[in-house]
Length: 198
Image (tube, rainbow, N blue to C red):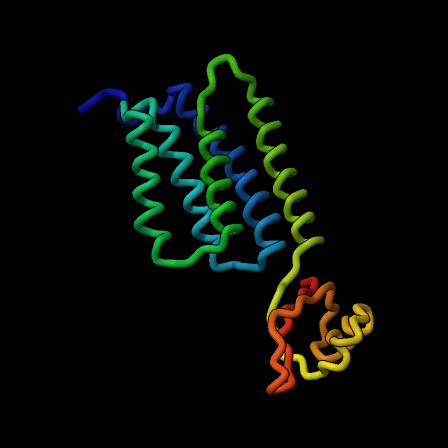
């Protein structure tokens, strides 16, 4: 039996624990504070947290277990294909998943001669960028859907503001713009794509 099986006086061990604490703090900020605030999808919190923690420890142990970096990336790719092909994730959820993996990898690396403060700054920059992007998409997030419009006489007038007010009153949404897709004079209806702000 090896003599060092119960010996935890290895500086690498305590270094990994310190980076793990940093990783947990920034995962909490990214997933619980930012992601959950904007998406309200609590069903993915468990997945993102466990994914981040697992990736952190696997990447931290790469130096100790003599596994090639390409092999490690392959493990993550296989996991992603097997698990996430069964459910349709939105692009935003996939982006958060990638950010979770990237954050955990950054925090797990033991960078020789690189200050820990630099890693903290990278983490803060990532969190700030996510918040800015969320606020931007929240401000300009719109939805488009198609409606059937029966007032063809109003459409003939080409009074855009009046048409917008009419469509807004019919749908109960604050319509930003509309686009006529098809007009049927036989049925006296028009198919219109309307866009409103979420």
